[in-house]
Length: 389
View 1 (tube, rainbow, N blue to C red):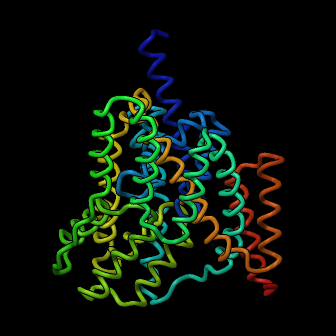
View 2 (view 1 turned 120 degrees about the vertical axis):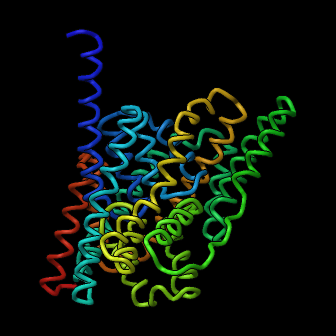
């Protein structure tokens, strides 16, 4: 086999691996961004060893600095690192499509029958498992992130600030700026000046969306705008939608928005596929397609532009220190989310047993997190059917 042919064969193998991993995650990754990131860490770092923990944490920090759905952008970064631009599109598409298709099917049933399939049992069983997966990921990622006493103190402060609802982007910028300042002050002033400009750029406030009538073009550009301004958790999407589509423009009712939230929670994959559901309700199948394209396109563009920048940041001590601080803040925000999810998920002895049992299987026997999620879903459905809750 010639050298070019060998490279082509290796690329095809890498693309197949990426497709299988992210299709599996797209079909089983419940729990919002924190859960998705934890499951990606299990697959990418622990099992396949495509990235070291340090590089994986760098990517978490990077996606927290740009708008768009974090877990989807992390999938894009991983695909780009693993198999170049082909991997970029394969990983992103395979992670998004299962959820988008499932949400569109549910939206069709909702539009036709006026109700949602019952999914309480599914949530009841999967949430405790997701808590165990997130805790395991936080433990391993935290060890790679907390490199100095300063970063440990910054992490503790960030957890407190996150619990007090400090703006996530502000928190990321402050932690990154403080970490970089410690290095920049020992070096040349130009480094500190560049840091100030970068921190200011990441802290720019989002612009308000303008009102318009419902239409495919309007729907696409509305969700494109939201996708370009969506920092932090996918739950922020629902705040945008409530303020604009419910309160201001009356495109949706409160009940429809609550149903969109429920669908985004009970389906695997990105929470931002709530836009798929909303698009279907407002403009049918075409609306679902344009809303999905609109919400995810900015993430593809931003990761495509910045994807090769992250390794270069590590070549600069000041920029690398900034990224260290951002990574600590990102892990701290995951801790806060894990605490909030845990309070909602661990509601009785059954859920506690599911969480503890999943943690043992994950940490002691290294059971694949995908199987744990599926097992939790089946257990939850069984409890729901038997009426044992």
